Every structure is written in structure tokens, then in C-alpha cells.
Image 1: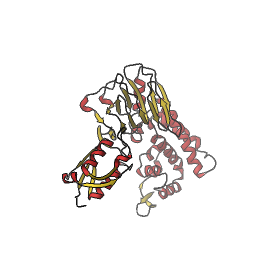
Image 2: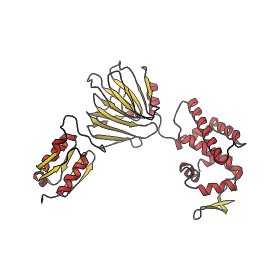
Image 3: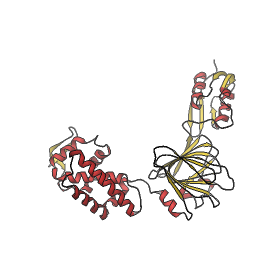
Image 4: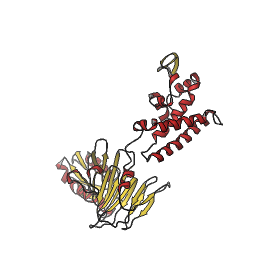
Length: 377
């Protein structure tokens, strides 16, 4: 018998765990084993190398457990046959890779491991452990399976962004690994389904709202530009608006046509974003990381200020970027400064203004608040 000594990371002659009766499924519940696999061997390496030396008859079970864990870790909720096929393929790859780590030829136990894996899967062990290692339900697959109209599906299998042109003239820049299902928009609403990440440029049509089902959230617009990131298995979804206005609400709060109770919706303006957490069922709004100047609000020349009041400068920035900027020190409103801000990003512009007047700024949700400062220039 052996025991792990945390101080020296070795196996000693006394033991806390007796691995002699361990099967592959037992290792899956072992915290040290999971830490070892998740870290790709960077953690607990000495412990498990010593284990394989002291329990050589359990090396096969250990390798099988590692292969099962890697398969379950990437498992999605698919129709039963497809899910089993995917797990089988992942198992075969993982076991082969594990075998090659120690030998250039397959171990005589290779076929036994594969047979054991099949038994485990068919017996339901993989499915009983799925809730531990997989994420949220596959909303995308569920949503497209419930639609009664024919859909076209595009899957971006390339490493580059793919541009998809829709029937109404709208376009979607679909990121690598993402999926988009859509119809010919013959019905009242223009409805698409997204799994992954895409940037939407929607043609305005007040008679036909554009609705994006993206996992746990639904995005509804008339005509605008916005970015959606909502991957299958992730509990958090993000929507960021470039132009126009967007309404976002939880998918389970809407009916089949995307209509919802107004009080449950979040409304976004340009340079605003929202993150929805499916675990807490809550939205969190904020400004985007890099706000962009709105169309039709002038060019960089308007941001070269000479002997201009701080209040006037802040008002110009509010209009140009569509954001709310508030100063807690009202005395600064009439304070005049010279600031050649040009085409600098918004937050860099604010850095220069605040450095000039000795103030600081913070972002609270979708509002920028300037505090402190004086006008002794």
C-alpha cells in the first residue's frame, strides 16, 4: 500500500488510497487524476508516474480513464447515435495518442481498452458522468429542430471569417467554427439561428423585424449593426451594438415569434453591450471595450479643441460616441482647456482631458463619471 505525501510529492509505504481495485470510472472521480489530465501533465506528474511504476497492472485502466475524461470533456448533447459515434472517435484518438507516448507500437491491451470503452459507453457510464464534465444544453440544435420552415445552414469550417449574404440584403460575418441557420424570410419575421460568433449588418425593414436566436438569448432589431457571441455549452452570451438599437431578452422568456414582456427586455444603444448569464438568469450592461464614433458625427478635425470649455468638450464626445459622460465637479463645466485630441480612441481622449484638469474617470455600467479636478491652469 502507498500514500501520497503532499510535502515531497511522492508515494510512501503508507497509503490513503488503495488503487488496486480501481476501475477507469473510479479515476474519473479522483481530484488528483482530473488535475493531472486538465493540466496536460503539468501538474501531479511525479505522482502518477510513480503510480504507474507501483501499479503496472492498472496502467490500462488509467489510460482508459484519461481517454474517457478527454472525450467527456468535449462532449455535447447530441442525438444518442451521433454522441456515441463522437465519443468513440475521441476515445480511439486519445487512446492511440496515449499509447504512442510510451511505445511506438500498440500495446497488447489496446483492443481490450477499446472493448472496455464500448462497454462503459453502452452501459451508460459516460452519460451518468456527462453532467459533471459538459456545459449547458445545446440550445441551437433544439431551436432549429422545432422550426417548421426549411432552413439553410452554413458552418464555417475554415480558419477565416466567412461572409454570408441573406435574402433581404443583410450580411453576417460568421467567425471560424460558428454556425448559422436561416430561411428565405417568406414569413412575417426574419428569423435566424446562431451558434458561435457573428457580426450582423441588417437592412432596415420596419415591416419585418430581424430576430436572432443565439443560445440562451434572443436579439431583435429592425435595422442595425451588432455583434453576437453565444457558443453552445457556454452559459454566458454577449451582444455588442455598433449602430442602431437592439432589444435583447432571455430565450425562455419569449414565445415562438420572439415577442416578450417589455419589462424583461434589455435595450442597447451604440457602443453598449450586455452579457447574459444563464446560471443566474441576469443581464449585465456596460460600454464596449473600444467605443467607435457614430456615423454622421463629423471627422477627426472636430476633436482639436482650442481654449474650449470642458463642458463643451464632453458634450461633443457624448454626441460623437453616443455615450453618457457626467462630471461630479460642476465647476469644471466652464473651465477652458486646449486639447488636440484628433482621432484618438475615446478613452484615450478622456485620459488626456483628465490629466489636464487633474481629474479621474470611471465607467459605471453604460455611464462615464468624471470626479475630482480643478481649474487652476
